[in-house]
Length: 277
Length: 328
Image 1 (tube, rainbow over the protein chains, first blue to last red):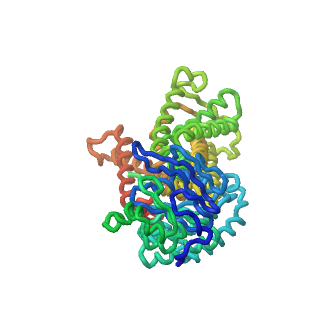
Image 2 (cartoon, one colour; image 1 turned 90 degrees about the vertical axis):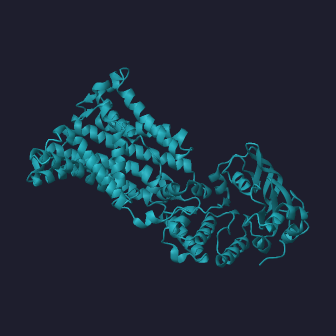
Image 3 (cartoon, rainbow over the protein chains, first blue to last red; image 1 turned 135 degrees about the vertical axis):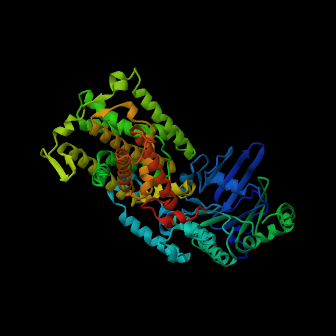
């Protein structure tokens, strides 16, 4: 779909922690331990604006923990990170989401007893009717109407229109992944962080999810995603960051990373051995 | 056996003031538990603050309306006090703290130290005359046949159900709004709500306070009806009666408290009447005495509730489809 690297990333050094021409996210000296285990120990990481960055690594490499720390779902022991120049360390999860850094979860969090449409409408930012007084004043209806149109457009794009009145709990696993992605777009992200968007999705839906991720980039948002499927990573990412045991061990365009002996040793080698899925 | 009398007595109970008060208490719980998923096991504390707020204020020389406001204010304060330390933690912490707080408040109210204000174990009586003085209903009995009420009873019943209606209108408006949608989202998965930029903690506080303030009105209604407050009325079982009413109706349904409360009070009175008539007619032999009936009827009502939960776990108004959605 998009084999060649993002043009702005040409000439960027292929080493962990390398600097990028226009980073939207800069992470510095960020650590998180669980007891004696250093789950995350990232010295420096930059994410290029407008590119699709894949975060890969064997199970237990700290990818999801890094996501959790950066999005405020888990406390960092130390470190700082700036999103578009705004420091976000110490901020709470909802504040980080409002700043424009929106994440999804490895285990999909569809709101089961809300309809698909309500799932979408919920995500809309800065709603007047979400304040107690605003809700009583009924002044939210116009805004709700606009949000509804936007939600319907997104549902259309993700092929979920027919399901919009159903409870999200009745959707299949793949449909939930689609809904979660559509819902995160509804929140108006500038940086979208997808935690294993392909996990548990059947091959038929896989292609459409890939197209959607590509579409998100075309609209100008930045995407970082965690993925285990190397075909997906090679097919869609502009840049690949590899983690192992909490650290960054390699960075580069997909083809270069795929050929890096360190990566093959830490990750691909084990995968060929049948370890990770 | 006088079945007509049993039925009219049961109907009187179904529309009576305690039914209205429990409906109101269940409206408050519905906000907290039905919509937000908060486990408030100390709802009786909010009811007690409503009752005592009213009684103490009037007793100290204030007007009744001010007493209601004092009760509501105290309930809001209790919501903040209990919510701020616990609502960032897991759901079970709120349950433990609320049930303990309810007992503490009751014990403080009945202590010697508080006797000057609360009347201690004796409580406070005859504080609601202002309410009965403005009764516009002419003296007489109203109703059909043996199903009738005095002007005094009718006045409290109407005021009580009017309060329920106002609370339900408020709730309907709120729950249809984006604010209500956030509460339901928090009930389903609070991390998902957080990841979409919702300040989950602030919403939980608002929900706890709103539900508590509605609960305080339920307590005030009970107190005004009996013209008496006593600390030993406000025991934990009241919280669980309110839960019973709500679960019977179907949590997360606007009308659940009304349906639940009328059925609950109808059944309580009906089993009581039936057992007493059966005892008088000698059907129960010598195994059961009159003093056992109160306990037996609760056992029977409990059995009925178990059957309902087995056959219709979503409650009377609940949506079966909603229950069947799986929580992956």
